[in-house]
Image (tube, rainbow, N blue to C red):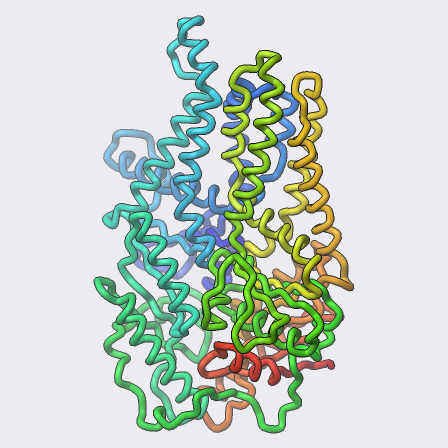
Length: 629
């Protein structure tokens, strides 16, 4: 089961998948089904099943009538992916429990699975997925609070103690949250396998994520280090890369390997796709100790950085690229692990250096920030300068939760003002119920309010470079303004409808202000002169397929995509057999990419190790190659 909105599971299995489980052929002796979660469709199915009791709860607990409630329930829910993902996992697990009972003859037959393997989204949103039981529990608590007064009236005046459909829905959600949380924290039921790369950036992200998981009571029993370069003949780039990977592997074993198994998957010359190739890859997972000590004596004499770049290559610096010039808002996005953050940081650095009078902001909107690791210095939610970088470059790692917290405080203050005025009219408990409703803000809405910081930042900066989350959640962020604006408009319409009962006052002003900011953001995102979306990818089959889908979605959203950066290419294979094989495969993948008209391909050279720190980023960003100037 894939919970990543930008699914690659079907690409890896070489099977066309959908939101319905499909049997994967060629798996013996057992059976394997695969499914790519369609979160909006799954939520629509859940809502259809529970729409009536949910509407009754809102009707009982608020002053909204049924027409208003139906219009709210018809709205799309921004950021529903993680919430639905955890509910779907619970549903599949419940099916497995029922199936076991069916096999014992205690109930009718049911379809169930003995094992559920979850291919999650990249780090930041995986942490949200695993925190979703708390979100579901909070939803159940809010709905219970809204239903409480009606339940008391029913029990005391109507003498009816039997639960209604609304009560059963609340109990179901609370039970699902509790059981899923217990299942995730029980190492006998749930195993976490953390997959990483032998790179400093991946190690830093893994340390942060595993620590966050363990703070919630979950256990990561195994670290899998993917695409480790195996021993081979002498090569300037491979030898330097291998030496750096051995250093990082030793650090992984030292810092993360205590009480955990560390497995290593060697990099293969041919990208593993399909059941047979994946089975072979699984059989080749090695223990970490077995790969230590393979360094040759030549490695110690390698230069600090090796680039796979021909000496006669016609290179260009990032600031000279037509795709970047003249833009005031540059997004960098793509599949997780392709090097978006490195490319975005290098581009921002060169743009700032090229125009000292221009103020440049590099902003990360990925919940799993990596800018600090790329620059090798601490960065937080407050903008700061980087030592050694131009003084006109500011860097910030956006704290979306804090941005939502500020807005939530403003809204709650406005609601308090409104309900204070309502008190004289006898609308008892309205403030408490309104505050409860504020807790139902959907997952991901914090990222929207964080994104509105881009609108504010343009008053202080000439260029804003945005390092986005990986594909699925970057698209969610770009699509979210439309859905959020619909919510604001419906809420304003409801306030106007009940203006004889309530005095909108400050709340209406807050909603109008948010609506204006969202509208300004929408106009900015679709302004081809001001805004560009640069897609970053790797010259491999699975990233290339996701990139094609991303380009299609961006075109439908009317975003201008003037360039695709094919990152870390083997441009100077020399006599190394491995490099020559990989370079040939990369050329085939780039030829198959076929970007839309007006979108150029920018190639960046493989750097061993990857560029980290101002000086390395600065030098690397002057070695890019483009088809057009």
